[in-house]
Length: 145
Image (cartoon, rainbow, N blue to C red; front, side):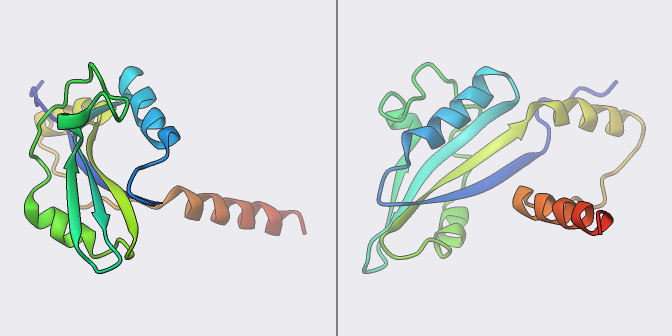
């Protein structure tokens, strides 16, 4: 079997009000890391002032303050400056967001097996959880009529 050091990486932009995420946001990520469900590769906080100025905080530099003491980040710097510029456009003035690069650990094994079998992923598409749940609820409700 082909051994891949990393599986697919996903970037998440999680918005919140103010310049610091609610502790529950960070606790949720920490729980997934501790449960070995994800590998946290890079994490930054991007804040946009009311005037539109962007401030970036590297969590690795302040890991204790954000609840990530003892967490080893996989690839600090994976989120490039171009990514920050691109994603920051989606943050409203006065708001902030956590920009997270993470690996779904189960996907590394799947990627290795696909590669070993000569398979090539041609496309992936993520459907947001609220959308999936709304569709399933609508279908279930339609079936009850």
